Length: 262
Ligand SMILES: Nc1ncnc2c1ncn2[C@@H]1O[C@H](COP(=O)(O)OP(=O)(O)OP(=O)(O)O)[C@@H](O)[C@H]1O
Ligand SMILES: [Mg+2]
Image (tube, rainbow, N blue to C red; front, side, top):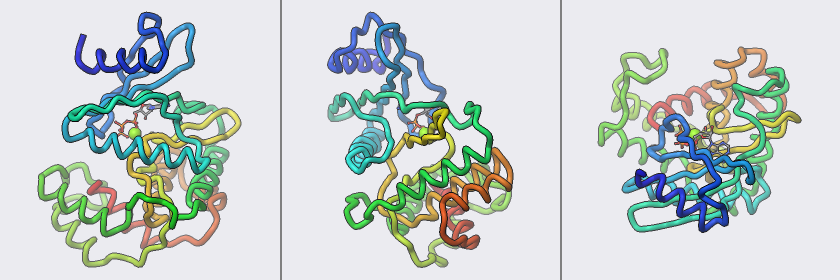
């Protein structure tokens, strides 16, 4: 048994599950350095365990604090059922967000796009001044600077519009052109992989470790780009209509470029 499985079984026991009655299946590799396990069994609801070790542990601690804060604000995110925090390793047990990944939803694209727009608008309507987590541009640029300096960013992964641009050149361009911020509570990593939708169009957010005070375009740019890629331009109009407000294409491009360094 590997260390992750052993930790997951301990956490499940602490959370009141019978480890002999469950099946653990590793979820296909996330980007965050965490291990995610799907926990199923005949006599219990579906759950997930997320485990992070060494330098990834701090990110999972952030995710736990931010997810709990969003729960307290009434946002649909997984409930954290149990946490085991040791110095070099953190594990959390959470319930499954209801519904399906966007890719598997039987709902029509226009309905999905509208549901995503409304869900993001509700998140962005939380009082940002009450949010203790900082995801403002200064914080994001500082994080990007560290990631570029450590060689964590591979320019070959950039979108076509930035093809051939070196990570440090992109960072310099972004640092020199910072737009004025319009601060709301953001999810902070609003890809379509990080939302679930049920058959009535109710949206839940998962993977909330980068939620905090930040510009609304941190989310709008990334989510609109995912919707355009998956469902086409008509669906992005539906998304924008349901979200409400004005559209700033230059700012969206800026935040998409910033996301290249995320
Ligand atoms: N509570 C949950 N409910 C439903 N599905 C979940 C839950 N937690 C994780 N998953 C599934 O596992 C996948 C990976 O989880 P998560 O996004 O938290 O990991 P990650 O390593 O941070 O991933 P990435 O960095 O790729 O976004 C999700 O995209 C989702 O399919
Ligand atoms: Mg994710």
